[in-house]
Length: 123
Image (cartoon, rainbow, N blue to C red; front, side, top):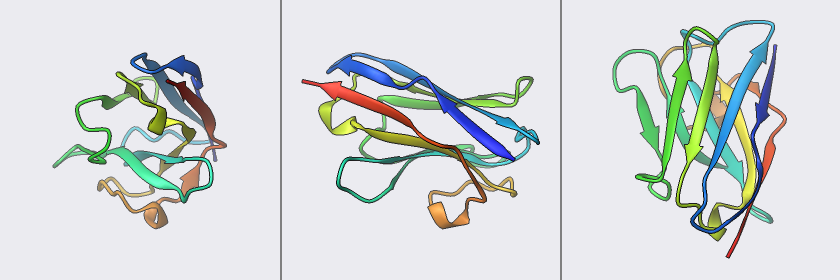
C-alpha cells in the first residue's frame, strides 16, 4: 500500500494551496486519515485528521479556521485545503492512513505514510 501526496508548492503569505492524498493497493474510504507536517529543523507534527463516524475531524490549534480536511469517498482520496497561509506553515506535508476508522492525532497510531509534499510560504 502506498499513499501519494501532491499539491505542494510555493506561495506567498495569505495565499492558498490544496493538497491531495491518494492510495494504491487499497482504498481508505472507511479508515481514518491524517495530515502531518515537518517544518525545517523541527519534529513532525499533527495538522488535521478525518475519521469515519463520530467526531469526524480534528485540527491542530495552529491551523484551526484556516485549514480544512475532507475526503472524496468515491475517489478514495483525502484533501487538505489550506487558506491564509503563513510563513510558519512552511514544511513537508505527509498524509497518513490508519487501519482503523477512529480518528487520531497521534502519528504513532498511523499505519501507512506517503512520501511528503513540500509547501513553502514566503512572507
